[in-house]
Length: 236
View 1 (cartoon, rainbow, N blue to C red):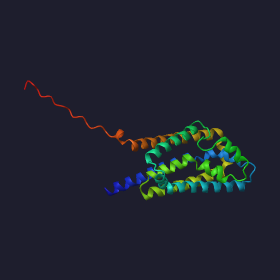
View 2: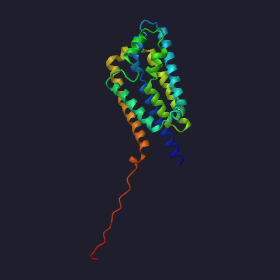
View 3: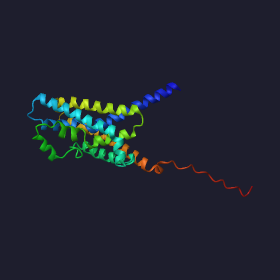
View 4: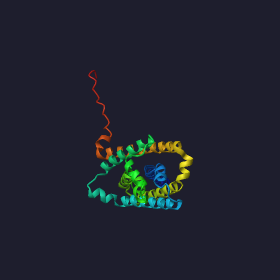
């Protein structure tokens, strides 16, 4: 029994880790930021681009960790329910995922006007790289929903670790932006985005189903079993 319980705990730990990391990494999607990063840092030295990538990833991680820690306070401050935020976060993730499936720039992240202004900025590490390209509304909503669902300390630690690992991987991707862009190309990036978008659609739908279940639990209650009525035999 002890071994079975320990195995179930490890299985739950692994499942939660995979879901948390996948949701955060896919919605941050550093591969989609690569062409934007190359465009807005065009003409900068390799050292400056590396420094901007490092700062952008550190700031984006700090933003997501801040919402991870203060998510509960925000829920209380605005009297938000977890069910409402699950549904809203799921819709936002779904919009992002649909853009990824169509290989279109995510409209929930930033607009063309903001990107055109960023080209002329001397420093783009904070805006728009860290916020909203990496730590955008979809990533913030994902972290807050996962935080609200977490009820054990190890779940919070896994969420924080997922944010840190995502930021580290994003830095590696942006640091090698030219190589990534060269070897993946438009076709490779489109395929990768569609695969991540498909998985993100499933996560978004799961968020919304969980929100509807929390808001309307009576819809998901199993119907009571029917009791067969025995009609007495008149001939007996």
